[in-house]
Length: 382
Image 1: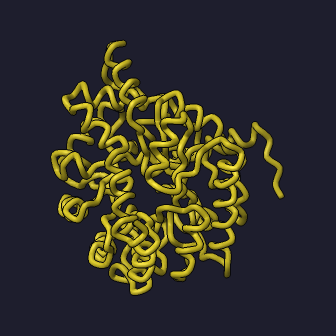
Image 2: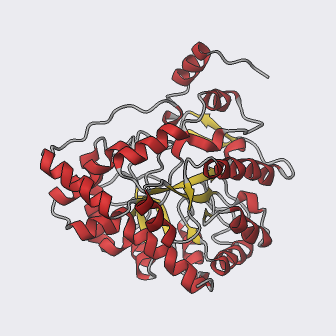
Image 3: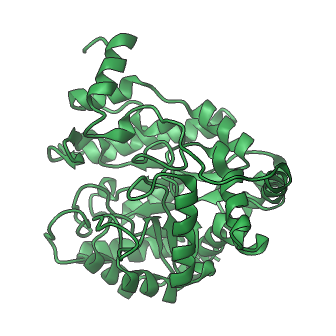
């Protein structure tokens, strides 16, 4: 077992920054606009009255804790440690009432290269599920200590907000741990998982990812069975990272609307980023009641003001009822919203640009609560 001094960790973090920016500590990012004290106070009051709810995040990077079989660069990243108390404190200060606390199913088989994260090896037998069990136990421990309030149903978001508690929506980024078994969906639900992103950086038994050449040609029969099992459980199906053919397959079998938690739209206004989806696909997701997550990754944008531009691009495309927030907090690439302390500035900036308070809070949380409620009602757990 290698020994990591603080000096070695910092040197290592600097060395890997070129291939994996998100592995280093966050930097302050310019806001890009001014808010008066009155405008900022108004934003804080709005967040106090209505819960903000982040659809995709890794607050405090809990997913690194206890991971085994990591390559050298990710061991250095792991050695930087977790910081859940600070993340929750930032949520409280910024008025973010609830957020996804996501496991990362394929973390143990990833590595950092010149172009970011990529799969470096296959899973060993049973490894994916064993790693999931470690991660979900770590998340549940956060609730057991009282740091967060685990969210079991949509009404818990409002109850936690009213009580001044931080809501934690336990989710899984990547369905690898399911190993194609539909019974694992029900057991994950019992563990507290309420949404699964079907795939992450690894094409798995469920379908293809969007950043690699297709293997399956879309959603597999196994993937369709998993989607139906998630519907039965009342889980939210998240199609971020899935190829467009895979998403079309999901939309064809899901009884409930789906979430694409962190992405943006391909087009003249944005670079050709493999993690962005077509306008047509976004419209199709919205037409079936789904949501597109506003993602503050530094891909073609550099300030919070740029993120607000993207919010209005999404609203213009699919309507305000079909946009939510998906920050990817604490695991994002060059984030332009690098801390939950910036939440009032995002709210204030949206309102300053002309979005009404009610519509602003739909985007900030109300739409996600509705989507989760729809998943439960249409899935049979109402």
